[in-house]
Image (cartoon, rainbow, N blue to C red; front, side, top):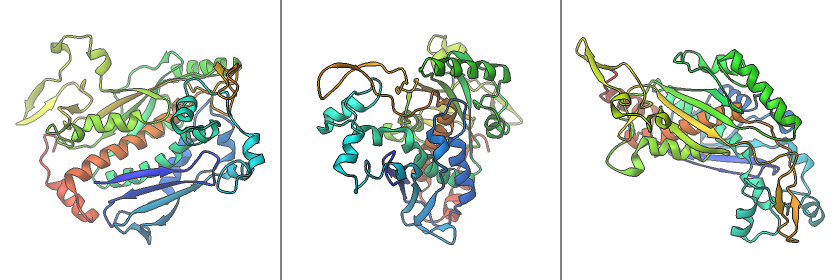
Length: 383
């Protein structure tokens, strides 16, 4: 089974990612991967960090001549901002440097307090540097590798913004060229009128030193039915997807298809009925979001990630200093006002990694030729 791990701190020297069990012979398109990293930096309401970093992946193991070897693939992304933090972060950090950036006024909604208690730290900097959404840059890099694997099987993943700050876009069933259309919009929204109102909501929050959250929709097209399994809970595709997408920073809920609204309806209004035409099965609706019984059912897989407002506020929230025990305002770190557009790109990567995990569990294969041949042989209701 394909698995991955990431490492690195927000202002450390670099981010590192390792994928193991990738089959040999997968072409690693660095231009595509760097393009995915650039997409992560898009979006109205992003913070100053995006003006500093110019993320690019460097592959240091597991690749030769642009193709995977079957051995663990290692990628690194250098943090350009580390130059300004050399005395604060990393192996060579000094006592004076670390003292200059101590964080004891822990931020509500962040990992600061729980992490400090768990690991016995008196400086929440040790927590927030790893808990930071900066980690998602490497997740996007590895997710881009997973997307290349999925493309070999005819599977593509897209995303777009559904809502920001209480402004909701009109629903769309047109999934053609979603990323190209969404990436051309400041908030990655396909509804131009809603996009303007979303930008207004972000600007209004920013003027108050506040933040806004929202919802991003991820769409997976081209899956055969039967990916995942009903026989064991850890192999259920919806569980694998929700776990991976739910682990993305700021995501607090994950919905498959129309799961939330379906909970208040009668079953006769929810389940996607089956019909036949020319001896082929088809459905007129996709309220299940392409997943039934822990498996793909051949329809587009539709996932919605609900992102809370970023917990780092310029106005500061009421908190307690863990060193003095006094009531204080949380210290503002450099942050975004809204990261929902970028979250869509990160959740694409998370969904790609989840689906690749499930497919590799099902197909195995030491080479991409074996993987493609085995997938081709899989029976499916949708061809």
